[in-house]
Image 1 (cartoon, helix red, strand yellow):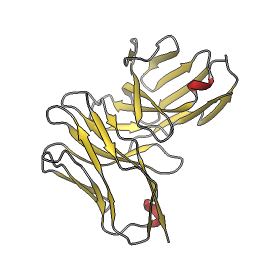
Image 2 (spheres, each protein chain N blue to C red):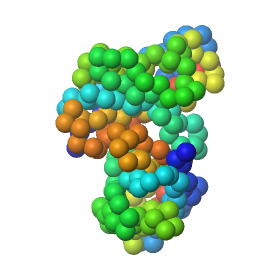
Image 3 (cartoon, rainbow over the protein chains, first blue to last red):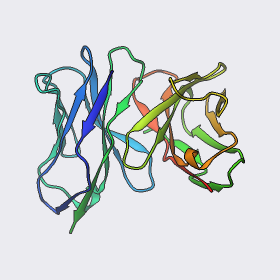
Amino acid sequence: GNSVTQMEGPVTLSEEAFLTINCTYTATGYPSLFWYVQYPGEGLQLLLKATKADDKGSNKGFEATYRKETTSFHLEKGSVQVSDSAVYFCALEPNNAGNMLTFGGGTRLMVKP
Amino acid sequence: GAVVSQHPSRVICKSGTSVKIECRSLDFQATTMFWYRQFPKQSLMLMATSNEGSKATYEQGVEKDKFLINHASLTLSTLTVTSAHPEDSSFYICSARTIQNTGELFFGEGSRLTVL
């Protein structure tokens, strides 16, 4: 079946540090891949997505590249801010699955000033 | 973006009672809503798909008589945990897809249920 594995947190960084949150997946075919972010007290929000191999999703300084050869979709940001502190979820949607998402366990990011 | 709101955000109840959680799309109509459950430090697990005006579709292993889902209008779906027990304590999250089916899901802020 489909599964998503992401690094356990919490990840604690100083402001302006480089961020990488690893995400690997198992799926048949060519799923779409997503990163969602959940700020304290709020619902999940779509951060970025990629729908085919080698696509790069980007938003708010975050990037992730769909790597089919390594079945990965790692999230990166060159310089984190305190306001980036949140829980980040990697997810996949199989082709034509109608928004049936499979989520990773979430990674909590804490950025200190 | 579109807003999905859940209520209550936190609820504590005694074992054996029933608890209703509401999921509302505030500024759009949603033909389909999804209910997830999240255990501490674990993934969101899809429980069921709720379609307006029809019965919900439950994922394997989810007791439909335990978790009653009603999607009576295009802006409201409810999840009722019947005869709750401590093992039902969890974080429940809903998401909604717009009637235009643009592809993006919008999530509620979640409801934390604690059963004593």
